[in-house]
Structure formats: C-alpha cells, structure tokens
Length: 196
Image (cartoon, rainbow, N blue to C red; front, side):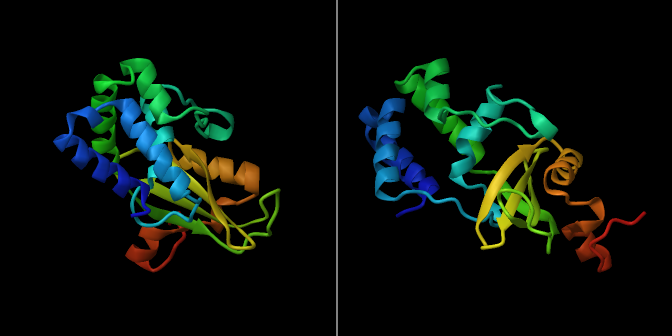
C-alpha cells in the first residue's frame, strides 16, 4: 500500500481494535513513517477522490487558517493538518477524534475537470502550456492546475469561485476567457465555448 488515503483508512481500522492507537500523535508518527517510506509526489489531478495531499489546505480553509490573497487564490497554510488539529484539540484522543471526523468528510470529496485551455504560449517561470480548472463536487471552490511544456503538472491554487480563477489565470498566465473550453458545455452542445 503506497497511497496516503489508503494508509490513513487502514490506520483508523487498526485503531478501532487497539485503543492505544487512538491518539493524534500516534497517527501522525505512523503517517510520517509511511511518508518517508513512500514519498508522495505531486501528480496531475485525476477525476475522482481528492488527493490526501490537499488535506492540510482543506483543513486550513475549514479552520480559517487560509484566506483569500492575490488574484483571489487562497493562501497555503505552512503548517500541517496535524499541527492545526493539535492546537485546537490536543494531540491525544480528542485530537484523534477530530482528525477522524475531518478525514471522514474529506474522503467524500471528489473532483472533476470543468475547463481546460491548451496550446498556450508557454510564458512565465513555469513555462505553462495548459491550464485546467477542477471543481470539487461538495465545495464551492475550484482548483487551478498548471501543466508545463515538459508535461509536469502542479496545483497552482484554490479559488472560491470559477470567476476568480478565470481572472487570476488571465492576470498571471495570460489565458483569455475565449481560450477556455468548458467540459459541461462540450458535453451538452458539442462546443466548449460558453454561449453569449
């Protein structure tokens, strides 16, 4: 097993049988050991469950540790979910129970691509050739994903709305609104451009 969410699910199952494991510091230590053995690399967003790599940022938004910043993108919290939970609930059983509750809600989140802009001029420090907008089905916000000329992808940020993401993509990466192809519109009318 080298998937972070699977590891967490397995730990929670073991902790149901072993009360000594029901401590936030226990799951954090186990997860750090797992992370050292199986480093989680950045990867391209995929349809389906939201990657556990987004868990800390999601918790930061829930706890008010992340806020809107430049161009509407939400700031990344420099700490970990473990630290945020421990600050509020302690690192023992209460912290563990809060983690399990948050994880149960997080694992229900799924994402799907809603728009893409391809064949961009490859500008900026990331040499961006393609950008994607991804929607979390149980959340109002959207993620901006950048794909460079060499095919590497990274999540640029989270935005509270698609309009904010589109404005930011234009301001930062020169992606004009008419460059976007919207997935739902392509499915409905064969065209990826919004009707005027």
